[in-house]
Image (cartoon, rainbow, N blue to C red; front, side, top):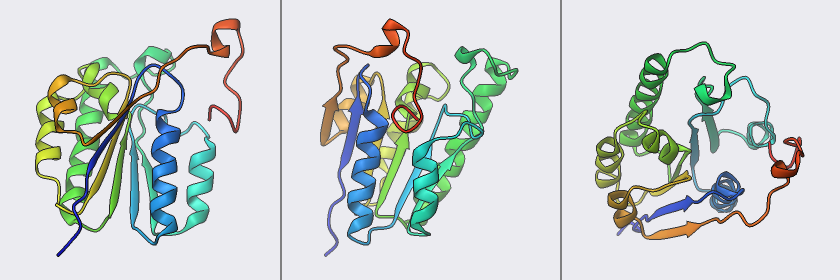
Length: 178
């Protein structure tokens, strides 16, 4: 009898949703679980500590960052419609890996933001959740969670911002925010 994988959500406006997901991934990897992380809305070309660390861990722990720079950052020349297509194409890749049933833990980092901003349909994510292989542990992160997705989750952790140095002009710092 296989174990039942559960659905986790890390949400809210506070710092630490991705970090919580990565902590869960590291814990699973430590017990020889196969882990894959898909990062949406984060530029492939932007350096980050998690990418550098995961590359050192080997094939049992993969991270895939799609080449998507969020249009709100102003550096991207991709029109919103092109960006939406890019997200949709990335989600197709997630579904393909999902159906392969190779992994014990899958993290869809920032997927809830992609839903909230209309880049991917809520019903597509719900369909993915409902078709989850029984033993797969699935983690979704993002600021807001649609009620229908929230209802499907087994764990929900809301990370609340109480104070953040960005508001006083402190820029993102290497090794801390990225």
